[in-house]
Length: 198
Image (tube, rainbow, N blue to C red; front, side):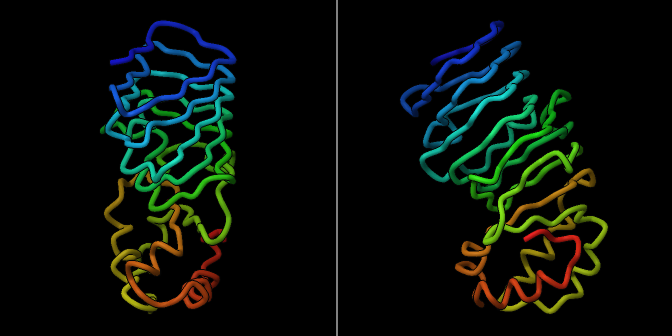
């Protein structure tokens, strides 16, 4: 087990692996650090940690990680593939979740959600990723749309996200692989929604 807590790290590189569990926090502050995440999200726990100006990298699909909601992420950048990750304030996870001014333009976000945050300060990845802004405002419209393949299941499930969800990011190639159709057909439908960024 590796544990970083009650300290301030600046201009440091952390390369985390799966051989032992990595705990970041509580009362950890990291500034301008490079963090290479472990191959499995099960090998890391983040709680009550602050990251300012840090870069996060993953070399493998980083799946179903919700502990970002137990961290303060300010002006950080992300690269690599993130599937089913959650960011921002979600009281189910922690009272300390915050994200602002972060850049995901070099990342793939696949089914990732952003809760109660300054959504305009975040740079989302472009197509073939797409970002649904304020999804709960348009759930009826999404559910009433004729989607190619079996994509209505994915878009219909958006209404099940917490009410403070401000953005959901999907990844077209993965959706097409699981639900049929083509990226071009999906994009034509998405372009009809002013609330969706491509």
